[in-house]
Image (cartoon, rainbow, N blue to C red; front, side):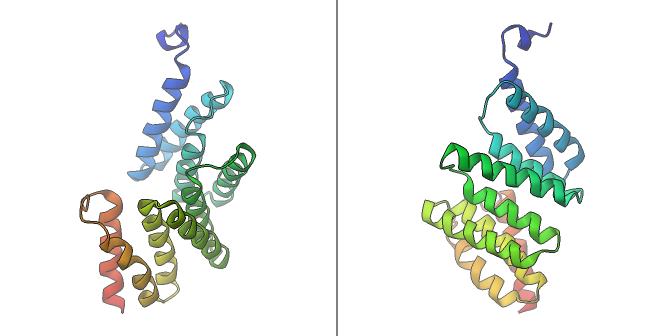
Length: 187
């Protein structure tokens, strides 16, 4: 018997697997990340632990987008949103809505995507969650840029990015800076 199983540390190991999977998805290694996220989420579900389940579902959906499994990604994020609805308010709803918008945009459903991204922007702003607001704005801005409206995308993202004075070397902020530079070259 494994040491963690003897002391019923399975949920802790599952959280570790999920976090590692999320990191791999963010680093562009979706296949391994997806597998770890599924393992971690499965163990948490079996042991009836809901900790981080919506966070892992969002990461799993983004990983599935990277490997072009859009319908499965949409099902997973819809299930996470429904789980949040049955359990009451969730702090990470803005991120789940952003991920749903990202999945829809990636699967060539831009009008639906825009609706969810706008909801994510509104809710993250109401929560004062600047990081999630910027991520939603960047996702929406990329959609608008693909539709040929770089000026509109820049006008949305630039004021949010300007509010940051620290952490400019983080992955999200570096990505947004590259997007802003590209948008400026298209205006």
